[in-house]
Image 1 (cartoon, helix red, strand yellow):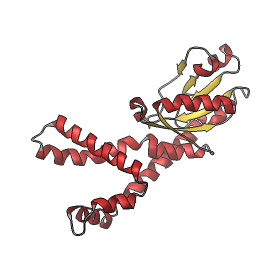
Image 2 (cartoon, rainbow, N blue to C red):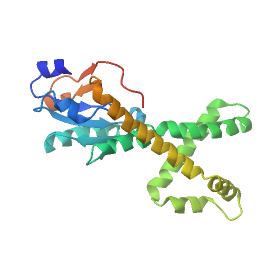
Image 3 (cartoon, helix red, strand yellow):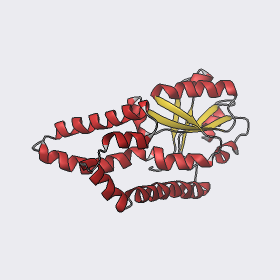
Image 4 (cartoon, helix red, strand yellow):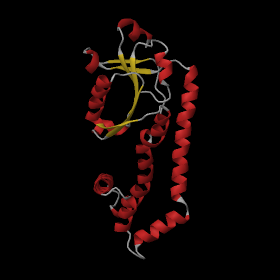
Amino acid sequence: YKEILDQHKNPKVISLVAGIRSKKYINFDKKIEFLRAMPNTSSKHGLGITAVFNSSFTKNNLKKVIIFLNKVGIVITVDKESKIDTFTGIIGSGPAYFFHLLKSYERKLLTISNGDKKMVNEVMSNLMKGVGMSIEKNTNLDNLITAVASKKGTTEAGLKYFKSNKLGNIFEKGLNTAINRSKEISLISKSRDIVFILTIGLIIQEPLYWELFQEPPTL
């Protein structure tokens, strides 16, 4: 990071690292334009969700960054840096939670598809795509549940079991645990070297520079 500051006058810098606060970067050079961006892994499919906290980018340059990040999904701007921790715990880590839940579907589906893993993957993919499209058309999740769950039917039976065993509470506690871990990493990182930096070429009209000083912390 220090080398970037030495080689480039007043660079526009984006950090993609979980847990390293903006203050640590800016303390090296208060003249830089700096922001934090936290993407999730779905960005590689063009369906990413990226949180952005702007420390010192100008409005014009911030707009350019958001346009750039929108190419791989959608962007959420947060007004407090602490909200990055919440985002990391629920969205940055989010895909893994769904993959974990889908493992139960996978086990059941393998029994009815005679072990055809390819078919099972296609079924789970369609299931998730259908859920996503339903959410896009109807923002009320309770209405979507009601549309599927008929009185005294199979869906209602499953939902009652989940509710009686407080699955929602367990899941929320898991999210809170991840959020708290993100906050812990932020505290630990205060004593660590800066990890990962992106100098954005779209703004400074130079090549895109990636500097990796050590492995970024795993989400």
